[in-house]
Image (tube, rainbow, N blue to C red; front, top):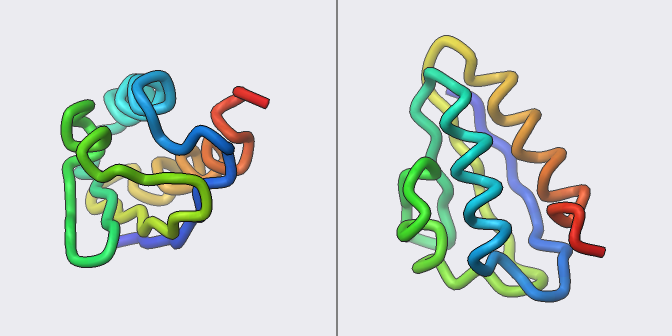
Length: 88
């Protein structure tokens, strides 16, 4: 299992477009990928799950991956967050 804490740095937070990018990206990995916000854990391959997290600017999230390509999955998602989902 691989985990990493990320902070939402794009001003608009995780709305529909970043959620869609996350899902498209996670579908490329075989491992199970989850995102946690507080005590809520959602499947990162579910667009509705991501949207319902309500992750606004400055929110800390934990990315968790379990499986064959877990390290690459976490690194890829961290880069998405750091790039502000290429919105700014």
